[in-house]
Length: 340
Ligand code: KG4
Ligand code: ZN
Image (tube, rainbow, N blue to C red; front, side, top):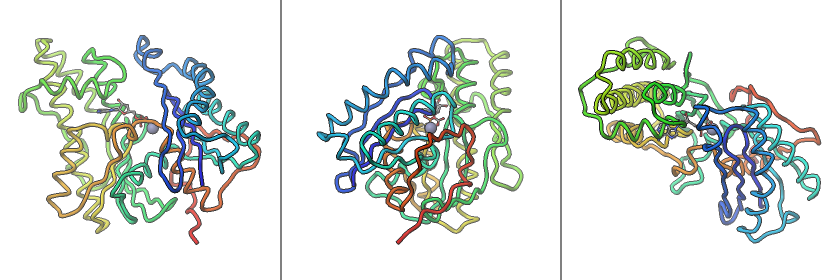
């Protein structure tokens, strides 16, 4: 079984091909960073237009890399949401049209399910059940996962997502877009224990997160600093420590509450080395194991869509001829995948 996956929910066009026997056999990506950088964030209309330019050439390239023809595909999977409506519509229309032309089914995929299942592309792959920490630009969620589509929300951000907090704080520090990797880089030069940021919502029970206060705290700390390069690096360091610590505290709670010992961490922010290190220490401490996708599968990519599409298709799920795009789509609305 061979599935093509198309991702276009935000500022990356990703196309990949998953082969049931050989895994990911093609994975190509076009990032729009250069287009949006001058605006300091994603401009939705520019994103849509670039997806229009990139999607079909990337599909051609992926087929060439895999050495197959479109007619050999068993299904075409695409990100149907959540995301920017215009951007989603481009990938969905191209995917639906290609599936029609190649006479195979189309499979709409939930973007966050793609992120969540991406660690299963690695070896060793996590086995159900596990606790998942999804940390991306738009989401911060702790989920108890018992199977494909069996997601119980344990907690989530009540305001900014972790990635959003990284991006906004990076902007305050005058770092480029996207802010996450830039802030992580700047933090390397920071000295520990110069500043201490709060660990929001950790001194009360529960598994929800709140990161918007960290951005305000950063703004105040920046204002009171001498605005030197060293001070900014120290602030970036303290911010990153606060996010890492907060995530680790909540993960420990989620693990205790569920009694599970496997933690899966996915989404763009899971590419962060310090967060990985911190969660690694936690799981070693409690005798469990933490699973991540490789960095290329942490941020948006086609591989995770091809793989989630494969799992859904294998469970008998396809769509009619409609083009599906849902900008808002809670992960918990998904149905459990049928297993035979
Ligand atoms: O999963 P993703 O590519 O897109 C969404 O689905 O949102 O996540 C993007 C987010 C951005 O906020 C970006 O700044 C953040 O992931 N990010 C990072 C790192 N790499 C990407 N945040 C912290 N450290 C990183 N190394
Ligand atoms: Zn994403």
